Image (cartoon, rainbow, N blue to C red):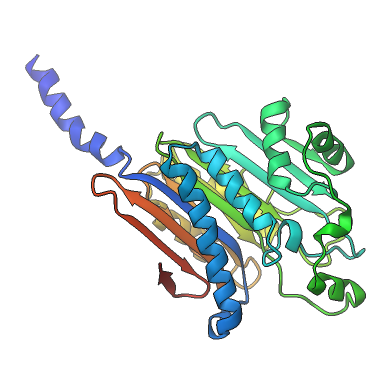
Length: 328
């Protein structure tokens, strides 16, 4: 009995260390790239700061009421997909053929269930189609025409392909030789009140992509991953490199098996493993304690976080574009 008591005392600090330290956390990103000078453009930066703030508020409303992580992730990503500011949904960049092909994925850490779609052309909100794949089929990923047809059969909102165009993308379509800097993705990771992790990612892909190219965003383990014993991750950047390095799974496994702090592991992958000249991008991640990371090796990354402390009930929120974060 004495030995059992001593064992319990020894384990108590470990239990406290592993316990959820924050009531809930939400972290978002709106893509990474050469945006370091955008902070100096007050008109444009104000629009992005406001959009990131709105996304966090949408997630907060759901999580504060006890909603599940998947509900918050989908609502936040839907908001990004409906905004022309980001390369997802309505603001998606165009292919070399002047059309739009969209990808998305979502994963829950409590049971490792996941859903993904690639090459969608008519689904208004790709993240909803990814969730439908996760919950309504025995599969993980559907692509192309079959994915569009499946989404329609599930009653999801269907639109004409040119719905995704904006005045800016229409200009690109008119002159595809003009390069665009709007490569990016949107994503959201959540730790909910139940202690579960969820990650979701949506994108319009790479500008002028060809031949049905698919990046990391819909690839579970590359652009999106969630495991309650590791962390929830959503990536943005040059997808080919994120696929080769299996970035999202790599990070979660470092946290789970090597017991590295999520920030330390994320920094290593983004700044050491990835080629900073070619594998540009970033990620957002949160672990089961509520610790989170938002590293990037590009000029900037649209990003933000919101969390509620246990006990005090204090809510902290900030958004960023370049290196600086703006507290809200």
